[in-house]
Length: 149
Image (cartoon, rainbow, N blue to C red):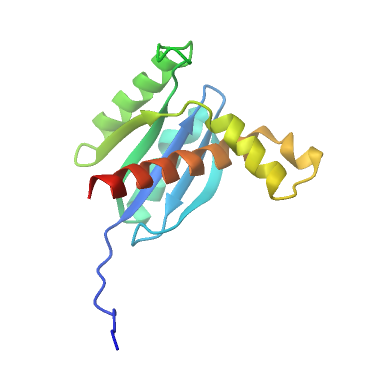
């Protein structure tokens, strides 16, 4: 029989699906096992939200989706994401900020909403799509990290 009560918290991973209007946010549990959608905030309120959240929760690092097109080139959104990542690095100097490929996350989010049985009206909620996209970004990052172990 094994008793695993000595597991130590590693700190949450927090993921952002950054857009110029809204930011979808997802987070893991303290042991970095389960990724869940947290919320969607207005882009201009995101930094204040993150300051508050990180002051209350143990966050180990932030993961941001980096938009690229099918040819792995920058999109119109890329400079905005890079600028926000730079702000994050300035604000949270001791925290790692990871940028990962977010191609297809919106499509995957929409498909997962269909697969889960959400009605058409709920699937049209762009804030929900952003939150689900952030969750997919976070799950992708976690899977990449597991392959590195």
